[in-house]
Image (cartoon, rainbow, N blue to C red; front, side, top):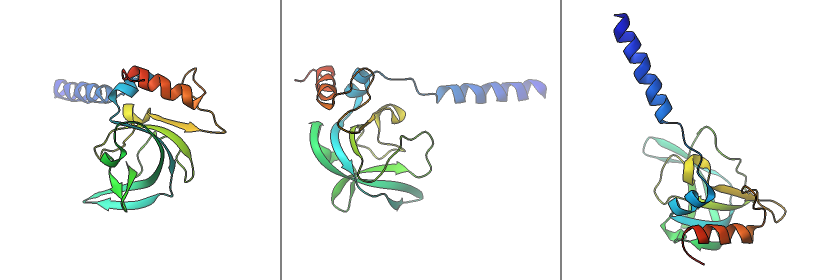
Length: 149
């Protein structure tokens, strides 16, 4: 009986370890992203899809850096971020916030590349992306990582 319990506990521990997200470099994030945009977030709405409840932030895309924002999930005819409600470890999101977002196009628990790593707030014209603080330099670094200019 104890051997079974120990095996079950060890199995659970390995599953927990398997869900730990590795930290991705900006280059890795840029390569994984299907869409990269600079956008302003609209006010969150609660949307139920089947049994799942999402916090949905409409996007006003101010710059398309890579991909096609029309491929993102849509809410009321516009691209939007669908984030599973009450998801842990989310970056802070607020209506009116200016962001650079590296996104997946499928509706997942979170659309941000790298388990929520792919979101960079633009505050007073600056970002915090490692040593990069200029949004133009961030754009250049992401395009370079994708082999684009």
